[in-house]
Image: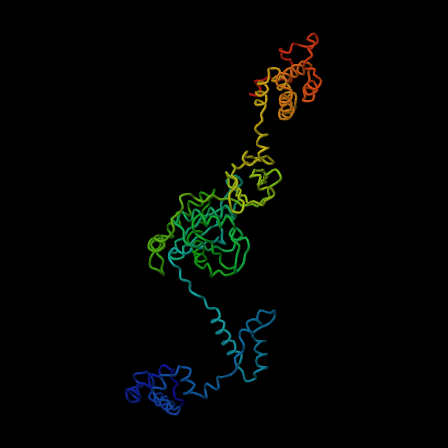
Length: 513
């Protein structure tokens, strides 16, 4: 009968007790838990290998085994397949382990049989699938995600069942969990859920770890994902930063993956037989169950999530800013020739020096902010009037500003400084046009004739023009050029110059005030 083969640990203990302590075979066998024959066999093999206790101590287990059992080690030294190559080949259509084993035996006829071949391959595969245990520091990370399983609400008008989204946020160190329902996964709902989660936690961690969904990431990438601008702006507002998990790597956010599963089991499952007719009603019930979840003792830790939070995360969370983040969408536009940019079908002015420049517009519910090279250059109240303009006078060139300063009342007031009939003619010209601004140039041209001919002659020329029904700059200029202002007007054919002409288009001086 073959002598029992001892493990290298027991072999070392047998040799130590024999050579160092000088004990008998029987005493060593009782101490180690083996037979006296096995003790004699181990001692005999060590002597044949030329070993002493000092040499045994210097050898590793593999080296000691190869010295004590050289034949067995040599017999087991058959060539192993290249399991990395085997693994890649298995991804090809129709390739099986059995086929790859047959090809292996063609190259190594004395190689391992199929059962051992598979065992070695599975052992290699387990070592390849090592998972690094993540250590989560207090206050370091908040993991966020949406649940694949969704709650629903019922439209009270139509009775339609509407599936909604379930947002989940989990703190890395304490596992404190926040959950709420939202209508969509769009940017406004995504950001609003974060803001409410930070409010629930009472602070912010150093990092936010989301999945690479569209509301968070504009350009999915394993190495350098492009974070959505509003999301990045929100993180900056709260003094944190965004670290998206790698695509198709759920272990990067394992905390929230487990958190979603817990919420599904302890909250969503308990809602399955309840009916809600609004999102607020659903979230009120989720909030109640969430408190129970966070106060519940965890079997692994022997304490609740909230207790861990108070001990670990709360003392080191960053404080919330005084103002909550206001959601805003970003759009890029080019300044048009009229120094306005179009944002959401409305036109907003910017400083005229930015003509043809690219600018960034931030659109909130109430305001429009326009930035050029990350510097704010304009701010407006948001307008929803399509195709209309919102203009700030300071954005206009100087000449445009001066033109904007002219009003009908100002023109009439200037005309009064020359004479009453000049004012009457100005009023008549402004009233005669489809819009008062159409008469601005005519009036300004008439008033400037006073610099060339003097105010007295201009007043006389306007008196004559008003009396004969002339209503343009050219008529007044012609009267002055031809000296007709010095010729008396035939009062038999017209009303006195001091009398105001009665006409339905003459609105009067009060109209322009």
